Image (cartoon, rainbow, N blue to C red; front, side, top):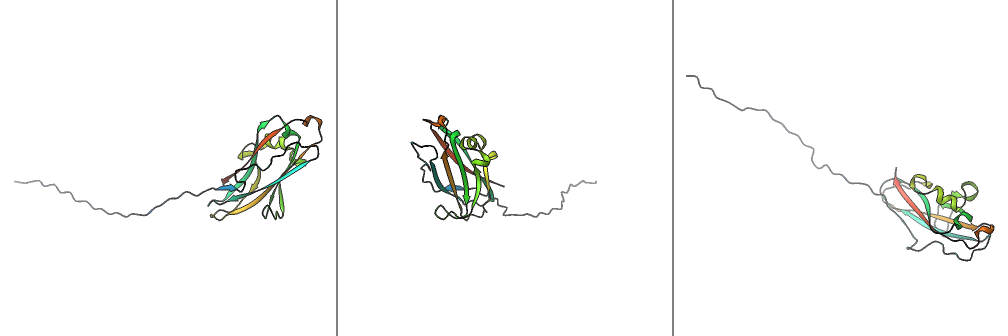
Length: 169
């Protein structure tokens, strides 16, 4: 009698690639304002100017582009009568150094034009490109406003928020 037997023979081999790890990079931006406003100017007269400086620090690991934009958060239209200049320096607020024009009234428009045009990162002003790697890269931004000599500016006010945003490239 012939008896049938089943066998389960198989060849097998494996290899692996262990220890695969992933970590996301960082985009980190801060400033030295200590939570206080750069400007608190009252009773401005035509031709009067105010200037402030803020140091913006990039400490992320990725290479970003930094832009500045703004929003009028209160008031009744004085931003349309304030000439605006924003400059980025290469020193600090004490020793500003060489400057790069970010926004100039003569070319780009007044503060009202700035808050109308530069409303978010996509259409913000400037293109500062600090180097990532976690080292602090600090630049000063000097902002100057000057009240225009226009009778319609009388009694008006405005409150502005300037925002710097970094996005990795």
